[in-house]
View (cartoon, rainbow, N blue to C red):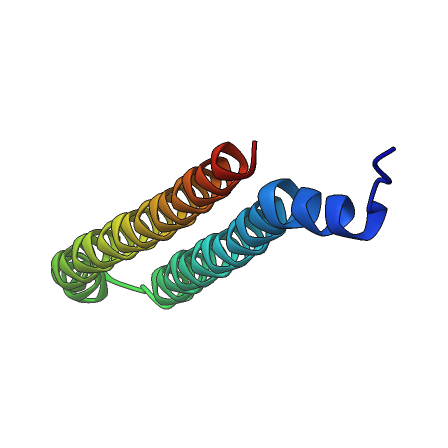
Amino acid sequence: MRTLNTNEMTQQFDNMFMAPVRAYMALSIDYSEKMINAQMDASKAYVDTGIAQMRQMMEVKDAEGLRSYMEGQQKVAKELAERAKGDADKVVSLQQDFIQKSQKITEDNVKQAQTAASKMSKTA
């Protein structure tokens, strides 16, 4: 009669299923944290710019002040457009990194499963 080695089965289960799940979850958590931080940084920058613009608008007292404020709006619009492009590029970069790393986890898991299946077929 053959005895079951539960430690070996537990180890195989952990290697085949739980380790990849833990790796993917760690990757997902890191990605989520980076995305949230990027969104918070962007939001703070946009809010700070908006508040600064409101403060400058409050300082307008005459036609010359209004003209000066309106000329400054072109610079602000350009800066915001550049910021938005940079933020979009950052998000794309984070997504590409996440995709590459998750594909690597999947490939490693497939290789490990093929190796285990090969070992099992040899022992059977």
